[in-house]
Length: 421
Ligand code: AMP
Ligand code: MG
Image 1 (cartoon, rainbow, N blue to C red):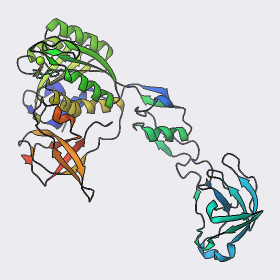
Image 2 (image 1 turned 180 degrees about the vertical axis):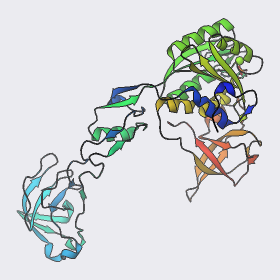
Image 3 (image 1 turned 90 degrees about the horizontal axis):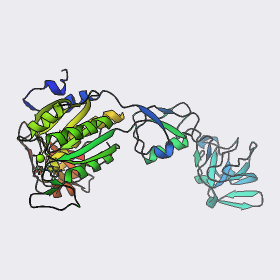
Image 4 (image 1 turned 90 degrees about the vertical axis):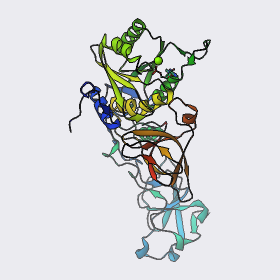
C-alpha cells in the first residue's frame, strides 16, 4: 500500500497508523550531521558507526590482584603437584613485567596489569602464601586453568563495530566510546522545535488570572516532552486568538525551526482561523483521527522551506498523547534514531475502555508480580483534560481499534512513558 501525503487523505476518519504514516512523509531523512566532543554527546544520536581501531582491553590482563602463572588445563595434570611456585617478578597496571615465565615460575600481579608471556591464569592474593620467593597455593585442587583473566579484545575486538549509526548515546555508550579512544563523535544535529500555545483564555503561570483564564499547561508539558526527546526547544509563548498575531508567530517560527508545534485552536469553531493563518504562508489539513484522547489535529507545512507544522489539540492530555503518537516518530526520523521505542505487554488489572474502530491510550500504572509479570491499573478519570491522572501514570495502555475494551485479566500493550525513544 502506498502511503498518502497529509494533503491527500481527504475528510474521512483516519486510523492512528494511517495518520502517522502520512505524517512521516513530511520528513525524509535526518538533519545534517555534526562533530561534537564526547563530553557533549550525551543523548545525541550517532550519524556514523564507530569502529574499534584496537582491541579493548588492549592486552590480556589480570581480573584480580594475586599471582599470574601458567596452569595446566584439566587433562594435563593434577592440582596437587602444583602447590608450590617461585616468584620471579611483579606486574602492575600500567607497568607490565617484561619477560617470559618458565616452568614453575610466577609473578605477583595487580588487577588490570598485562599477563606476561607464558602465563594463562591468575590466583587471588587471598589464596596464596608468599614467603620470600616461595609461593604456596592454598587450595590448588580448586584452581581452574585460565581463571581470573580478561582476554584482549573480549569487550570489543579491533575492526568490530563498537556502536552502530542511529544509536542514542547514553551513559554506558559514552564510557564505551571513550574506551575505544573516541574523543569526538559525528552525531545528527538536534532538531530545533518551536512551540507555542493559542487561546484568549490561556495565561502564563505567574500572570494574573481573571475568571475565564486557565493557565498554560500544554506549553510546559510539550517543553518537557521535547526535552525528553533530545531536541532544542524554542519557546514562542502564547498567541491570542487573532489572525494577525498567529500569522506573525508562524512566520517567526518557520524562519528558525525544523518543526513547529502548537496546541489549541484546532477544534470546530476555531479551526477556520488557524487554517486561514497557516494557509497565508503554507498548507494545512485538518484531521479527524479515531483516537482518544487526541482529536482534533491539524498538520501542514510553513513557508518555502515547507517546515512541518502540527497543531495539537488544546486539551492537555490529548495534547500529550498526540505528541507521543505523532510528533515523537517525526523526531526519531529527524534525529536518525534506529531503535524502535519499547513496547511491553502487561496484564490488565482493571478495565480500559475503548470502542471498536477507535484507538484509546489510557493512563496506567505498572507493577510487577512475584513471577515477574507486569500488571497495569488505570490511574483514575480518563477525561482528555485531566492531567492529574497523567501525572501518576507511568505508561499508556493501547486499546487498539480492533478492541471494544480491555477487561481485567486480558493482556494489553503498554507504552512506557517519558523515556528517550
Ligand atoms: P481548543 O482546542 O483551543 O478549543 O481547546 C480545547 C480545550 O483545551 C479548552 O478547554 C481550552 O481551554 C483547553 N486548552 C487550550 N490550550 C490550553 C493550554 N495551553 N493549556 C491548558 N489547556 C488548554
Ligand atoms: Mg482555543
